Structure formats: C-alpha cells, structure tokens
Image 1 (cartoon, rainbow, N blue to C red):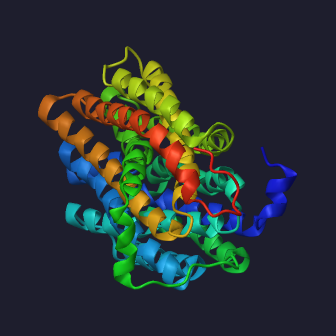
Image 2 (cartoon, rainbow, N blue to C red):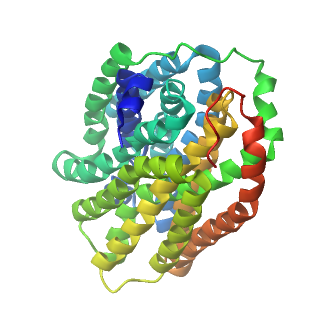
Image 3 (cartoon, rainbow, N blue to C red):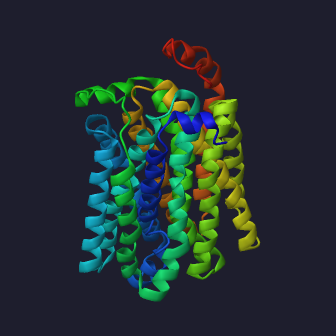
Length: 407
C-alpha cells in the first residue's frame, strides 16, 4: 500500500507529525466517554445527562473545526496546530489543578476538549497539501487514522481512573499531548504551495456549491457514526450488559481500532476503485450493522461483533469521503475540511445525545441506533442518485495538467 511513488511524492515527517497530533488530540477529545461511568456515579447522572456529557465535546469540536479550517487557510496549518495544542494543554492543566466539582463544570470541560477535536481541520490539510491527487486517499487515510486516539482513551482512561481517580486522568492526559506538541513543532512543515488568504466572506462561497453539502452529509454519517459510538460505547456496554468500566473500555477500544485502522484502507480502496463505489458498499454495511445493533443481542460478545463491523464500515467511509473531497475542492480543501469536519462532528453529537435520550425515554437504546441507521440509508440512496452526475462533471472541473479524477 505504501508504494515507492507515494513515499517519494510527499513529506513523510509531516505526515507522521500530523498523524501523532491528530491521534493524541482525539484521545482527549473523547475522554469524557471512557470516564463517563465514573463521572456519572459521582454526580448521579441520568442517561440523558450522560448522553449530553459525551456529546458536548463532539459538538464543540464540530463548530471549532470551521474556525480551524479558516485559520489554516489564513495562517497555515502548522501555526494553527501549535495554537490549538497550546490551548488544550493550558485548559487541561487548569482543570486538573483546580478540580471539576459539578456537572456544569464537566460540560465546560467538554467545550474545552472540543478544541482538540478541531485538530481534524488542521492535520488533514497539513498532510493533504504535500501529496498529489493520485495519493490523496492514502495520505489522508494515514493522517486520519489518528482516529485511533479514541481507542487509547477507551483502553487506558477507565483503568487509570480506577487506580488514581478520574480527575487525575485529566492531568495524565497532558503527557502524551506534550510529546505530540514537541514532535509537531520539530517535524511538521507547511507545504510549499499554500492558497492565498481570502476575505472571511469568501470562505462561505463554497457553500453555494451543492456538492459541498452532499460531502458534508456523507461525512456526518461516516465520521458522525464513528465518533458518536466512540464516545458512547463504554457507557453502553456498562449499562446494557453490566460490564465493568475497564472491560467496557476494552470492548470500546476494539471497536475504535476497527474503525481507525480501516480508514487508510478505505482511502486506498477509493484511490483504486473510486470513492463513490467504496462509499456505496460501506454505507450499506453501516446501515445494516447499526440496525442490527439496535436489537438487544443475547450477549456482549455478539454486540461487540456487530459493532466491530459497523465501526469498520464507518471508518472505511471516512477515508473514502476524503478521497473525494480534494478532487472536487482542491483549492478550497482547508475550509472544506473545516465544513466537512464540522458536519461530521454534528452527526456524532446527534448520535451520542439521541442514544442517551432514547435510553432515558424508552429504557432502550434502540431508537437512537435505528435513527442513525436510517440516516445512513438516506445517504446511500442520495449517493446512488448523484454518482453519474459526479462522474460526468467533476473531470471537467479539474485542471488540464492534473491526474484524472477517480470518482
């Protein structure tokens, strides 16, 4: 998969720095999910409050991705990433030293963690601008595999909380972030070709293009499903199957690893077969998997198997969407990454919050899962109707000296 052509075409140190920054930022972005059982126990939270608690960082990150996307185009991805990492480190240090004493302060911490979630709109353009069109899917898949940071949170946060208390996990999370900050500072480098800064109003011009909204919808399903489940599954496995928080974290980590490490595969498949073909398959698998998960499985292991399949499909879909985005919006990839990432986060907020709300109102997570499965099915139908138009029009929009567009 890592061909000689790929390795020669870009800047490997920057790609690695982007991955590491993205990875550890995502780790802290979803930190409240793996810590959710301990936090809920201390503050006596109901299912809807738990759902909102894990959903707030996702929504905050979604909105801040737009800000980060504009900053990337105006001051460059490296400086934007350094600013974001400094804010997160300062906020975590403050929360750890002063303490988190009530539910409202937990929500405030969730808003701060959204800055880490905005790293998506920085790391992907940082990597993308170094690579030619024929390697976009793989390059963005590798950078985007930083989604695996959510697995690190699921693996270690419940265990550390059990040993040291959940508030101390906030302080411990700063250690890998400091490593990522130093690596990013030393090795990340902006690509030689950077778009000229635009007036703020010009960034909104891209929203006049219908294709932008369709790509945003697709990512709201693929990434929204991934991050919504990443934030919620520790609480889900604990609530539905009575698993110890540490074991529930291991189950969640397995699902997250499946989605994260299939993302580059999804990008590579999209490079080879086209993003549309890849997305049609994975959206169908995701819809079936989420609908099946809505029915209480006889055992936690069966539920794990179904959710592993669902997360793998969603992860591959993430890679496929970002094979398509640079082909249609090469010059606007910074701001488009912000918009697409924003709607991805909104999809995650929707899933995480509706799972908690469904549990509170009906005693079951079923309606939350079914609602998102229906959204995946809608995206599949929309994509099927769009594919012929995209294949006919997109090649005519590409520069004459560029590689052929593969939709």
